[in-house]
Image 1 (tube, rainbow, N blue to C red):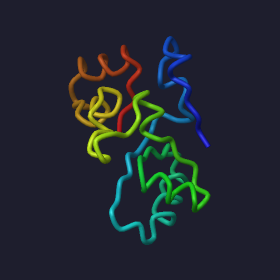
Image 2 (cartoon, rainbow, N blue to C red):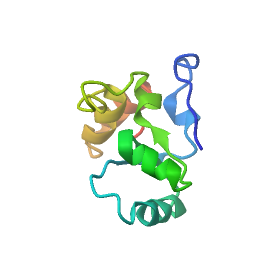
Image 3 (cartoon, rainbow, N blue to C red):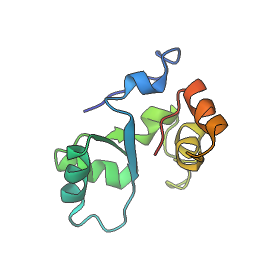
Image 4 (cartoon, helix red, strand yellow):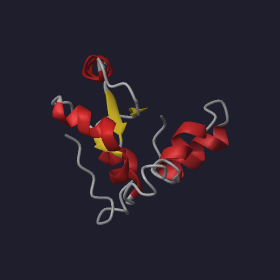
Length: 114
């Protein structure tokens, strides 16, 4: 399992803390066959990022998962409605890969793409 203690290691770039440069954010209501899906992604060297019930289901299935809170240094709150609205998550999702300055900004701030 990937454990990130970002509070004490904020000086290190996030990329250096992750096992790979590819990550996927998984959040599903229907968790049937979730472990099968995620195991396939891990075979392609993706780091699995998840929160709440999905993260718990993955852990219970024995799948390595990085919790969103580990990337944001904030707990899930507001009944789970506030968990991925954070630059370390949204930046990795919203960055345009075809824009050099977007990719430079991600790199500068240690944000990994989703």
